Structure formats: structure tokens, C-alpha cells
Length: 148
Image (cartoon, rainbow, N blue to C red; front, top):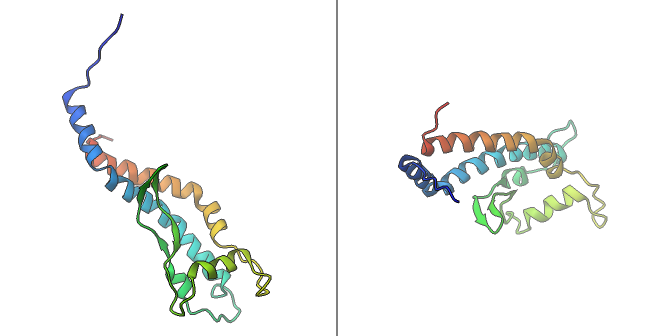
């Protein structure tokens, strides 16, 4: 014995419309979440390079300005957005390399570790997820015509 249930035509149309806009919805939601983490990473980075302390800083601000959010892209696991550094630096070096030395330290350069990315990721995880959910729900309502 079997039971056949058909979706109402209106729901099928709404789901079809939603499917057409999945990329836009995911872009908005994931970018919003990444911006939460990026903002904290910039704050942490400013402190790590000395501009957040009373000590004099030799920082030009280039590393902080290079920190940002990548475009959202689909990948084999779903959708992907990253907080990272634009390349290259004005001096031709890699922002990622400079950031890596700051994050993990360097024996060669006698540089102690001054983590800024991992603490930002750890401290904003819940807030970023909440922002992703909020923006996703807001964007999805536009296409699903949800109430409330």
C-alpha cells in the first residue's frame, strides 16, 4: 500500500524561485557572518602589531588594510567564504607570510607569536553563526514569501 502526496502548486513555485536565488542568498548570509569574524580579526591584528597598545608602532597599516573577506564560492562541501589577506604587499612580500609570522612567531626572526586570527575565529564563532542564520532567514523570506 502507498500514499501519494502532491505538493501544492504555489509551494512548488516558491521552492523553484528560491532555488534560482540560492547563490545570492548564500552570498549575503556567509558574507555577513565572515564580516563578524573579520572585524574582530582586524581589532586583534591592530593590537598584535602595536597600534592597539601604548607602545610605539612601526606598522604602516598595510596588513590591517589587506585583511578582508573573499567572495563566496561553491565548493565540494557546499559554500565557502574566507577571511584572509589580499596580495601582494607594496614591497613585494606576501601579506599571508607576514601574518603567519605574527600569528605563530618565528625563531629565525626572534619574533614571539602574537595570535590574532585563531582568537578572532574562536571568539566570534557563535555570533558569526547567528548572523549567518539571521541574514539567511531574511533573504529566504523574500523568495519563499514566509510570514512572521
